[in-house]
Image: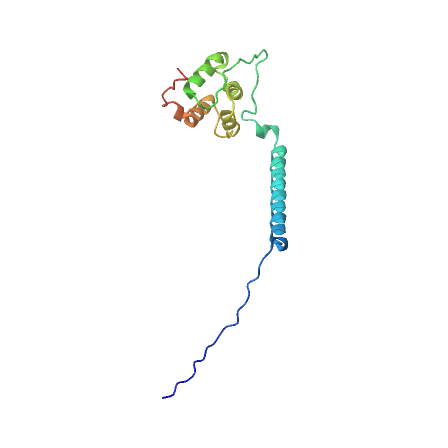
Length: 158
């Protein structure tokens, strides 16, 4: 009986490269990308600001043709933050502005002076095409803050 010698085939071993912190060129590329990203954000912001500045005053007004009465004196309003009942705020606003109850443009225009914070931001984002009368504004306002109507008063409110 004869035995043949076993043949063993080996694959040459490749050493995997070892990266050292001093050799890392990838961080420079990431920093460059970060700088380019920030530069693009600044340019986009500048373009948005130019768009706003290019708008005519007429385009920025919710009520562009409002006629303020000659001896108009603005009342002092409790500012609405968006955390209380919108119906109560509307009642308070209309009662203080009762002299101008028939002048929807004045009512719409000065409603912003009774708002603060998120509620004022909401008002600033209203579209003129959607708000033609004070009733439109009233409905939009109650719709926006209707979640506050059903809330039970907290201890601090009482």
